Length: 447
Ligand code: MN
Image 1: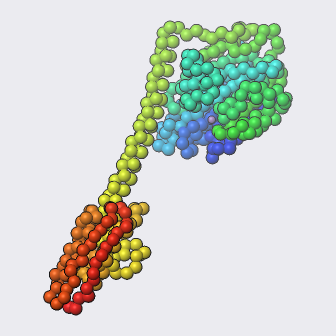
Image 2: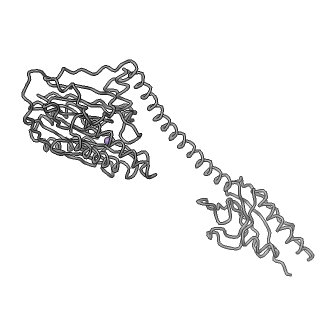
């Protein structure tokens, strides 16, 4: 007979605005899901996965049944994600442990998809049962990274497996003989990213109350930064199966679990007591090849998405940059003649501005040159045009326009005796600067 005691806690952390983690704690089934996908997606995915897992496991409470329940959960999340654009791409991690009866023996079945983790803690020793389905962990497996490097690797959050992101899922399954004093910890990466093994060991060893242990773990992760949602479920084996003398441990590892028919699917591995020593089923060469191909396809798919997103950002930034540049170019290559474009230069003097009449987006006209000529000297109908603002494409054009107005005025006002020479406008202004010397003589016309 096996008696379990458990506690759990989940916290949004100090950075995230919503908690997309979800813990499940029943008398015989315990799980942690860490949802992902923008807006509501992550929360929906973890909720759907946990609900589907609990329901499906209830129908078939065996080790294989637990793994099948994960497949059912995958289908539930996948189908829901296909029904609405908002939820497309959502997914979740899922790790679960269940107390099941197999061939008259109590067995703890343990499953995992993603990078949430399940640990076994016994006699002060912490053993990670699950292995992360992340790019960093795969690089550790192939020797490209050391475990220490993987802890800080930029790809440590990229999952190679997740629940609900495709119609099919591979589930890792373990069977463990429960022993008195065993303590299992299920947690999301929000805990393991903040706390090292030593800190987890310290906390798990500090209290015999599983609820208190879960609370302490959350508090410690918050203290260390709490940059993600944090979830922990602690399950204690208060009374275990009678000791068989051998060290209970991982009995069966099924790296590529495929759902099996419900009838007569009890795995022979647990029929034998005591349980065999840790022994992974060695995949046949064909299976290994198939698995490798699948993994390659999966990785290619993931990379493609990453590159596509990257490319999209580059193109988007280029377009926005181009538009901003064009607007600026258009603005700086525009000049106009007006009286008082922005209301800050009083009077009826003709002024030359750089920019567009009335401004362009956030660019306001800049005063470039004072002409010394007043609106009274401008002949109709040009006076009306100048009042509205006359747009020119260069400073020279604007200056030429003013000169034309001045010449028109003098042409019409010459006949009288001593006439002053036409004004010479000497401009030392460099386009864009506003220091200008303009000398002009204004002659009041008489008719
Ligand atoms: Mn997380």
